[in-house]
Image (cartoon, rainbow, N blue to C red):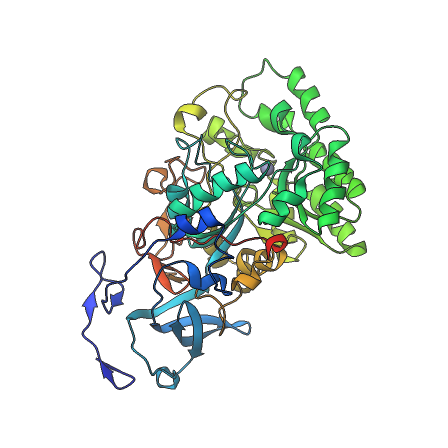
Length: 503
Ligand SMILES: [Zn+2]
């Protein structure tokens, strides 16, 4: 074959016959552990965050694809150089290719989208490795087309200060195949010293649990104190908005009822509304981000507030968009998450808000638990469902059904998360010259039935069992194929993306 005046011998990918790859060994000198020891992402004499990860970048041409450009799907070819998009052109001969090409990916007319950024995951690891670790979590993400995540700090140990932060950073950096940011806690014991976490690079603070039993919830005056301290830093507070008092009262009332649906009655829609009102009042000046909004009144409250103030965003999960209390019969305790499943009427309000731009971001709240942990009564089962792997596949199915446009999907899974959480300086923008080549190649004609046992999360179950998902056939991060029907890079390929306070 001849490309740009040079001849190449083509060989077919061993794993499947879909991608044609020009083979050249990819040396990967992993020096991330040394860098972390030194906190060397700043100290190795390189001003570019991306050039220090120790992995050799290569030039890649992806040809014959469909790309969403200026509101339309258009035929295109993409040249990637040193991990970034160099040029996009409709005509392959217009690609100004001069150097040596290491890889050619045959697009076969497939859809190419920027890969997703999921700003709400719980990848566990450390003391909770039986639920998930950074390798399985990041593989699940890559398989589902997510190449950047923001992990939340309620881990074992939690991210309360420098020690907890460094421990997680080492764990994630050595295991993750995708890029990541780390959030910090803001609760009781570390309020008053949040600046330490901010300076060492957390993405934002939270999720701040306004209600979650005694262990995690931020209590009494602490919420106001935390929000004002976060405001002083210019950081974002991510809130899990539920009212503890409302929930506890109902929990006592219904503790003998073990029907799974009781979980939604114990944590009613009013609980979310009360908490949102309280946070809006206490954090008048703070940049607030409401996690996993689940009710129509919550959407209306936030919409109203957005009209009178800036710096307010919210997210929705696929499980609140696609599932409802009518699923308890099928899911039992596997349908337990917080906020809980809502009555079906809330779903259409959430879809409308998403499409009308009142909800800014789709995030998974990936919170895996083992089957053993879930196989108990509704009160004792831990809340949370896995979701990072199915977020984009489910939303692509929704796009095919006309529930969301491709443009809105890109905004809510890539552009808005990058903008809101300051990931753009790390190259996490749209697919255009100068941005990281983070992308997914999707055969939209090939939907798959979602099966928990086929997913890569350690959970091996999913609340979306049996539903259709359109999975990417190839996932690329910084110009490298990280997923091609299985992991295609080594543990530790993922880069840590320091938050704005550290840059
Ligand atoms: Zn939450």
